[in-house]
Length: 148
Image: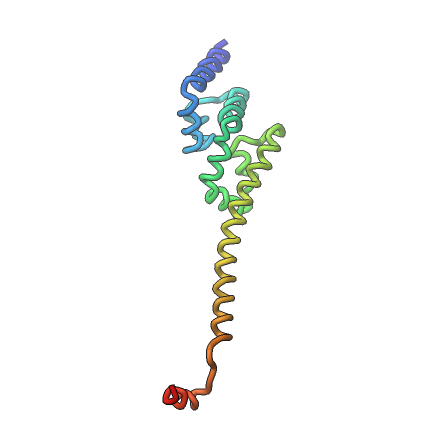
C-alpha cells in the first residue's frame, strides 16, 4: 500500500512540476534526478525515464550537453557504462540507445573532422606557398636584390 501511495505522489509531482523536473534532468542527469526524488523502485523509475527522458527528449539534450564527458568514457573503453548511467539497460530501450550512440558518434566525428580539416588545410597552404616561392641560390641573392 505504501508503495502505491509513493507512486501516486511521484506521478502528481511530475505532472505538477514537469518542466522543472525536465530541466533538472537536463542539467544533472538521470542518476541525480533519481537520487533527488529518492526513487528505489525500478518500475517507477522506468516510467519516469520514459516520460521525462524519452517523451520530453531530455535524455538526448543531456547527452548533447555532456558529450565531452561521454566521449572520454568511450575513449577509455567504457561505452557500456554510458548505457547504465542513462538507465537504458533494458532491451526495450535499444532503439533509444542507438539514437544516443548516433548523437555521440556525430559529436566525436565532427570534432575529429574539424581538427583533421584544419591540419590538412595548413599542410596544403604550406605546400602551395612553398611551390610558388621564388627559389634561388644564396650566391645569386645579392644579384637579385640589386636588380630590383
